[in-house]
Image (cartoon, rainbow, N blue to C red; front, side, top):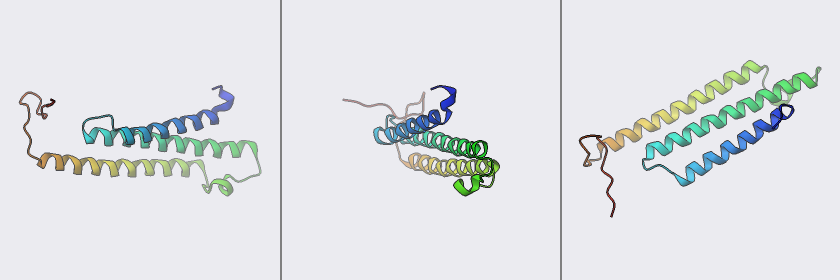
Length: 128
């Protein structure tokens, strides 16, 4: 996508990222639950970053094209710093939420008695 269409590129990236996050959540391609949760969490964080980039691009586009207009009337953000600060806080909260979930899942799995291999400390793969 050419440079003149930078916003279209961001929209396409946002759509691809959201589709990928949904596919990861539905298919669950990994054997361990923690790996699936981590994959979905990283996809969601990437999606949030793309959304923040979209908002920043819209904010700067309004400032460039409409000199007299206030971008706060359209987006509700006073300045670009408010958008960036909001995205940093939102990503930090999401990461903290998934970190707590990963710790809870790891503690739950650790309490389940299982036979583990001495070499890797992982449960053996048993198949018929």
